[in-house]
Image (tube, rainbow over all chains, first blue to last red; front, side, top):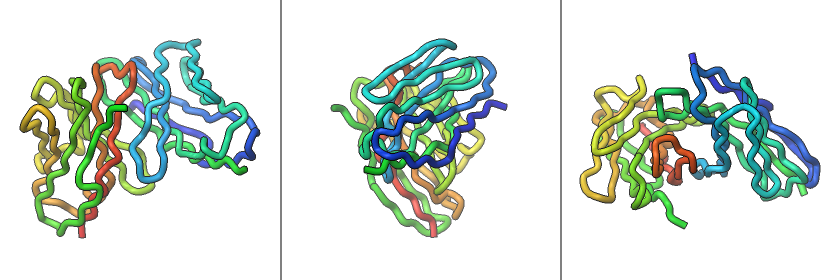
Length: 110
Length: 115
């Protein structure tokens, strides 16, 4: 069964304290892996798409990487405005639907 | 920046009643989706819609659910006879292509409360 597991469930960082979020996946043929940010009461907001092992994408303080079993979202020198829930999702071969993980709730303290 | 608009933002309904959740996707997008998120749980896929027909649906999307694109702009989700367990945040999303290379654009959601 296709599955996505994210860790940790919650993370508190001091402003400027870099860290990484993990997304482990089991899927029958990966079509794509996606990272989204979700603020309270809002819909997920697209961050990155990764397609194959070794691929990396960057956007401001965020960098996403992909291996054959997991993806990491690295946050460098985070700011309080980076506080949100970060969601990982996969698309399996032959389908366009997302399978989401439960997310990591990130809180960055000033 | 283009947005996906969902109405209403919050709907309270009695068990057994029909509800229609409305969405206006981004105008040049071709693929449309409904997802839901029960409080404290994962975002779950319900249905995808392309070329005026359902392209994929989950086990959750049973005969009580239906989707429609009644005109060139709206995309609706109907629940015929609501149950308590249908209480959730319902998200509409759209994308240019099915692969989602640029991701999906999600709306802000409709919080459905069944009492």
